[in-house]
Image 1 (cartoon, one colour):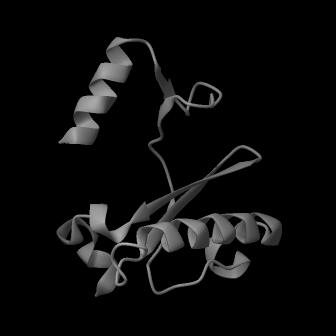
Image 2: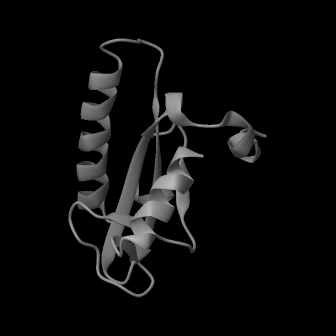
Length: 111
């Protein structure tokens, strides 16, 4: 619910970037609707699985590791998932803590 509210406020303020029509801008909330790939908390990011270049996998994996170290400082059993998609030549990735996920919405990934 919180993310829907943030999206609505950003959109009304003209601060929401629609990635299907606009270039990403640092610090702005972005919306993307389209094909994407999901990496679960037990899977490593690799070019074959992810469909993205090795160098990109390495950068995203490094960032993921840093985020996991930070969130595990308080709670050891927390993991991360990665959502990624390509937008023209650019690769976009979003790393989220398993603490912020609704497991019911992701159940099809674990069947």
